[in-house]
Image 1 (tube, rainbow, N blue to C red):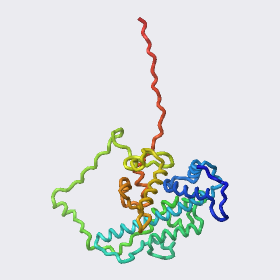
Image 2 (image 1 turned 90 degrees about the vertical axis):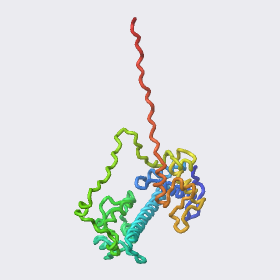
Image 3 (image 1 turned 135 degrees about the vertical axis):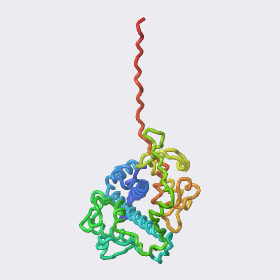
Image 4 (image 1 turned 45 degrees about the vertical axis):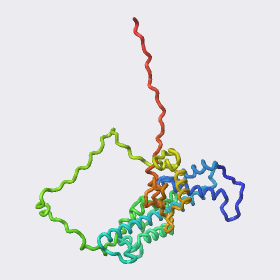
Length: 323
């Protein structure tokens, strides 16, 4: 596919080349390992596919990648926060506690409370949102790599270097704690005393864990999902869906999304959630979202090892003995 630079777009509107680059860029980013993929490798991939030097589009490509990374990091943080809240509600429900409507936010550490202007509790999603507002307002994203965040005096009280948009949520967990004021202690089971255990007879022993297989045995090696942009091996039901045993990861994601849109497999109440139909259900397990789909697909992808050239064994010439 060649880009046509002759077609000029109206002033203020992106030309057809830009629209094509932005659309393909989104597809590539959806199928990429965002922690390891670089802007340079993505631009090279685009140049290879579109058959043209894209040096003039560097600012556009860089800007689009930054917007995608920021949006993805924020979505992941919010999704993690929502999961954290759901798990807390589940624990409260199992102990017979009815959580009041609206519930509580997370309890903030003294350091985070000072950063947030003295608030002692706040929804975790709001904490993430305010942190990103501060980072953008103070230009703390690394100029060379927007995934990295430079620590100023205030952020240094909360985070340890190196800080990235992907490990921020993990470090933030030290400063956001579940509010357990509503937890009931009446339903907790009393611990048995040591004397009661001794008087109860024989002490139960835990079964020993199975010994690991010795090196060089027949145990299967852990499969790793085929990454990058190259061709990977497609396994099991995903291979049946694709109609081939080898394909590019970007092509696999593209075909899965085409099926989702064609058969209306998105949750009507939340477009991020995917409802697998009979076809998708052979390789995707509910609950699945647009963020967790990549991990499930990786179970059916395998890197194709580089084939080493066969070395023919040396055959020594036979020497006939003198009779």
